Image 1: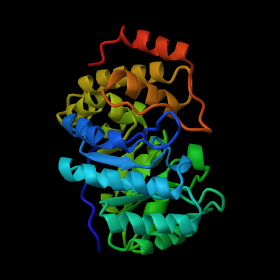
Image 2: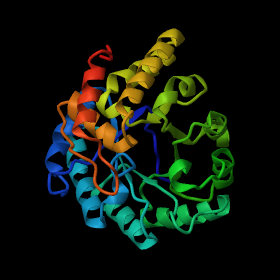
Image 3: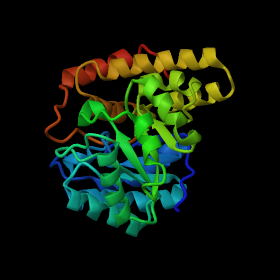
Length: 302
């Protein structure tokens, strides 16, 4: 059985685009170093924040390949999201990811023929896992996008021993009671990554030990401070930093969807330039970008 030991903070990386909407691979080396220097030692590629479902198979492979090169220099854990496509393409992406040496896979459910229960999801993930039999596999639970509402505590308990490469989930939901049930499933042996930036402090105090949060790209110091504070039982500090992070996220996302606004924040507040989001996402206006920058200057988030 393959092992999966990474725990902690992982950034779901943003995919950079040029003005002609082609993928800009040139930023990835500096991007990886920026995150590593910020104490973010895990990266997720081609997820929701990375607009993976807006990339074709060739582009997703190219992005993954460039990140493999980058993390060899930074010693970061590299997770690649392979789902959100027809099953033949998902299997091709899983095989490719294993062939280039990624450290783990994350997979959405089928987005059209949605799994209705644990048995359906287990069967799907077992098929995906068989395409990359030497690479740890995790499931991407994000019901607000997928409308797959299988209870993760129940699913994880049902999955024990049925998917040879399976090691846990990314839990992108605000239902922390369900999240805690997932953390406790199978005697706590599964990895459960929180995917809700505004709930990190609360989740960490309830037993989560890991997160994959978009804000770790542009405000990594806040996520690091929250996790460290909880580990040191400095709960007031964790709560105060969480309140600050929640405020920052609210300012960033005031005028538009999550990914396009977070890409603006990346360009404004870090040295890494990722450009606009690709269609069908809606980008915000120059006036809204200006307002975001002006408001953020009034907040001491460093």
